[in-house]
Amino acid sequence: HNKVDVFSSNGEYKRSLPAPEDVELAEMFLDTDKSMLFFDLSAETQYIYNFFGVKDEETAAEGSSAKQPIHASFIHIDTENGKEFDRIHLPNDYMINLTQTTINEFMTMVRLAPMRHILKHPEGVLLHTQETDTVFLYNFSNNNLTPVMVQAPSLATMSQPAYLSTFLKTNKYLFVELARQDNEKTNYQHVNLFYDKPSARFYKQKIIWDDFPQKEIFINPSQSSPTQDVREILFVLTVDELTDAYSKNQLKGKLKEKVESMNEDAENDVLVLMKFK
Image (cartoon, rainbow, N blue to C red; front, top):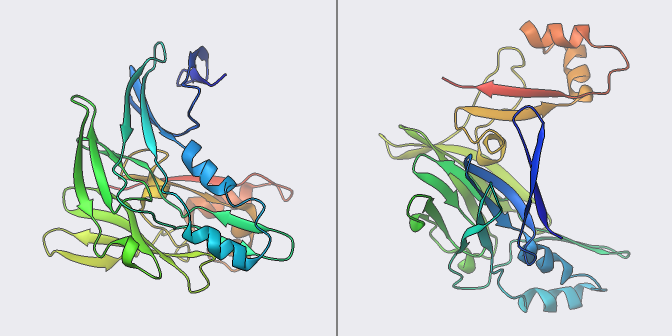
């Protein structure tokens, strides 16, 4: 049976909630202590399973043209008893394929394009799926769904897809991540941008961390989603990355001190929470 286990902020188990049997709960957003929102991953999972058994490139190409759109949904439930408050379906106007496909003599690997489906917004949450060019704002107080950003031209018209995976909003800026499919359609290249509202212009991001100036750091939906705060990003520095940077004398300050205090046989990566003013 599907269930959601609830824990306190200090890790104490509280209770288990029943969840709908017809969904696969993923990405969670805690609205208040009384309700939370999940993205239903079941349709996307089935989307990948439909490729299993493809044996050659010609068959794979035929399958790609015959795909059905993903009818994605979001589930809003009560944290006290698991009651379903609302099930939100985004409009599906056309079929869109944003998968990355790798075919070899042994297997066909299909991965979905990177995307954040739920993101915090001052007035609720932003909802986005890969079968629509529109980002929607969902308001918890009245269950309203309002379009707030539309991509043009439409993804359906692009031979080589490029899309913005929703956005992070501050008073002056919008932080966005542009994902563009490469020529082989096996991977996505990422460009991190910010939109300056006063000048109405886009700029590439460049963030310099004094403790590790060579490290590429970006504010984007993927790195801000764990904290759900545009002023905070969360990322991992691996032991190998830190060891290599230290050997090249690229580290300074507290990060350098941290690496120097690490055991030579250390296996734990370093989790970095970076806060912006």
